[in-house]
Length: 424
Image (tube, rainbow, N blue to C red; front, side):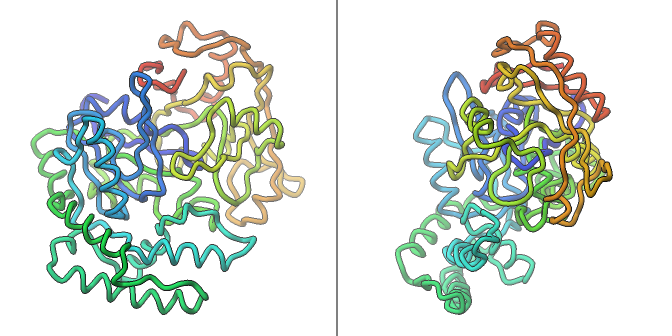
């Protein structure tokens, strides 16, 4: 791995602990690039007991290397400025090493309003978005009417922004929603933030290519997880971007030969936020116990995450799609007190055993997990940094996952801190 670029992706429904993994690895790379998603993502990094929650900034921001926000990201200038200022107040101003793609899309004040209107109109069928305007911004991108990073340098940006908002107000009116004032305080805040981040705009794809021409190495950071991918996830209960390795290639500006090693992050159990089928979801009481132990509340919204046992059908789906060569297994210590640990190895659908994720939502909703149950280890592994020191049952759990996926666990999380990691 020392001579290769690296991609870090989530292999479940997001919240796998990518922030910690990226933070642990970023120090050996020349640059970290965030590839897709927006302020709907929340990556948590714990160093020396201090927790930092990042939304738009790459998780490598606490290391000396360059940090890039790539073309596949949708950027809310107000959210980005708030995040920059929060880190700067703590003595770690990221703006000195941050670059913003001139091709990224910009989230405007109209996009969250549209997000709320669309979700409200869906009623019980709502997706459960973060209401940050991510989906409407990606919709503008595909419709070819969005504003981009390069537009932050355009003297006509205020007029173009207001024209965009007026156009979106017509849609809001059709949904019976309150319009956004094109000259209101929210728009003025947005324009002020846009002026702040304009000096960060650059051709990040060209910069990456130049760096690699000189022998530099890139760590590409995915957001959300493969099961939330717009194409290959549990549609429509997904995010609005390509969360897999394809999104890394287009979002960062790499070609397929430059991707390097693909590492997938897997939580030792499963969580998801929002609506949609969840085959291994636990009953409320068991889920609450796991939620409290694991601190399973959204880093962005604070919403409680739904909790369940590890679903290897979903993880294998993600491994195959992304060409994953190794996994980072996170939050293993949260299973410490479990007397036994069921792992889903297949589904039963209409009386038949299947080992793939159905595309039809109604099929996935009816699918029943087929479990293999492993013994728990009933001992604390918190802070263990040597795999040979793990209890035998814990080692057996890891080895079971490795055999089922056919790839090694090269990083194992035994606590939230950067140092609470087994590297193999």
